[in-house]
Image (cartoon, rainbow, N blue to C red):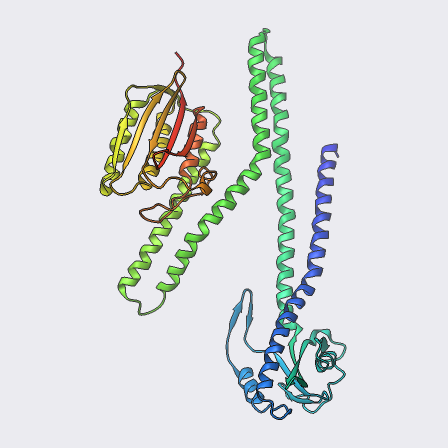
Amino acid sequence: MTKRNRIFIGILLIFAAGIAFMLYRVLADLDPRYRESAEESLVETAQLMASLVEQDARGGAIDTARLEPLFKSVYARDFEAHIFSVTKRKVEMRLCVTDRTGRVLFDSLGRATGAAFSQWRDVKLALRGEYGARTTPDVPDDPRTSVMYAGAPVRWNNQIIGAVSVGKPVQSFGQFVEAARRKTLYVGLVSVAGVVLLALIVSVWLVRPFGLIADYVRYVRSQRRFSLPRLGRRAWGVIGAAYDEMRDALAGRNYVADYVQTLTHEVKSPLSAIRGAAELLQEPGMPQAQRERFLANITREAQRIQEMVDRMMELTALETRHVLELVENVALRPLLEELAAGAQDAAAPRRIRVTLDAAGDAQVEGDPFLLRRAVSNLLDNAIDFSADGGEVRIALERTPRVARIRVQDRGPGIPEYAQDKVFEKFYSLARPHSSKKSTGLGLAFVREIASLHHGRIDLDNAPEGGAVATLSLPLVRA
């Protein structure tokens, strides 16, 4: 066994031991936490029932006449409640009412009426005006039949005239404990399996760069003539490829996890809307107009998810690029004239004017398709945030080294709380005219395009109002 394999196995054993210890502590803590939660609910119920009994007290005596028909009715109720993975079909709560001596006046199960409960902890402390609780099995030496009780005093004219004890079988919430244990074990085992798989994949990725070095050594050996410039270029190529693979191997996991988390968060809202509309459509006798409205909601939310996924795939494809595949000299003024004309048609229904201010031209090196997409995204944003009858202004400016494309609207501008977030994935502000949000990927898309072209994108509030986006690109070198 190689040293690398020994280290690999050692790391896995340490991780497995850590997971096992964590699972042991979590599983051991589940039952006490559920019992505490159940006891807290019993305390409130006991106080409620004590207050109810106090309403029927007469002359310092407890009257339990209306409790018996009440509990007969409760125990006879037919229902079916689905609580996560558990289905509840009957009421299991118990109630005992005692007088000031601890003698049972009422037992909801009819088993202990007339018995002396003065020595039970919950009753004894309640008769003193203190809080008392206990857990007692129905069948001696059989913990599976245990019942939790919580007591509360019954008062009349500021005197304690009896006690109420509310009980709940431990088995009723024990099924939740078992379900939680199964789920916790499942998550732990899946976590171990996932880490093993990830460690194998990462180890392969990290070993691959050394394989590239071996390929370079074989290339050097195959050369018949010694050429230092050629070997140098080959070496830099091998080192660059190794660095890219190692960087992708180390960053890939966090990259994917971040995307999955953000996409899941954003998709949750439209999925909930689709599910709610679909459930309502199943109701019989729904008016046709209302049915069409719910169908339109489903179509709109499904289109929103589709647009989000499409834009995310485009953005992912851009982020995985290191260089542009297609590079040519692009004249910016004709490109902006074409985009301004198309944007004017889109803005016409809201009477928004799109104007272009470009005294001269400027040429940059880049991909014309991606540059069109970037400026088009900026124009769409500017139109969306403009008021009806407003103006969107496009300007082309040139400095000795940089060309700047400015897209300015006359909308409400960027709120102060959003100025540091506008380029984050899935972050979007509501459009003033529709109060709806976009996918939140447009500006992130523009930023990636600017980065591939060795430029930058800025978004600020204009002094005269509105927002102005500035796309800066390096000019073609003479």
